[in-house]
Image (cartoon, rainbow, N blue to C red; front, side):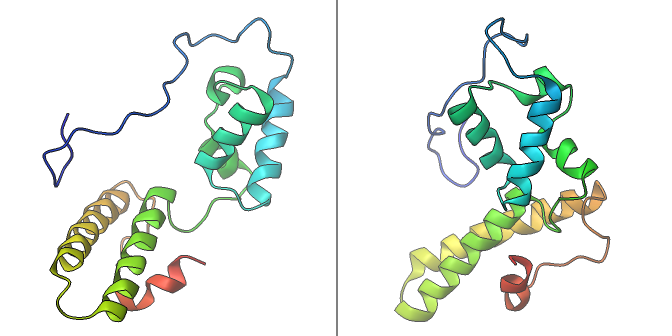
Amino acid sequence: MARMHTRRKGQSSSKRPSTLQVPEWMDKDAAWIEEKVVELAKAGNTPSMIGLILRDQYGIPLVKVITGKRINQIIKEHDLQRRVPEDLRNMIAKALKIRRHLEEHGKKDFVSKRGLQLVESKIHRLSKYYRKKQVLPADWKYSPDKAAVLLR
């Protein structure tokens, strides 16, 4: 499937495990994994980073298969979730980076201006979705002036 604002295909990435069963070589139990997820979340890692750390350092293919819960659910149970979801936060950080670039490099960088428009339109669509799903408050609104405060 093609990307939203370009005609290019998506980039290749790692694949999920083919079977959704606990591997027989797994020596970690669900309580240990849940404890490790909470520990990594308290250290300031995002849910996707936690998944990568568990996969690469501890050999845990999928948390949901072993614990029965997703990483976000475990973080939510222990009240460690952030105010803004991770994907929306990443888009806001990208918009801030483009804004800083435009302030530095001026008026004639039309490619970056267009990129900023595309990123901010994605932010508005994503925030509308999260407001509808009640992940964000109904009165939450993205503004470029207050975006740096949202990332803290």
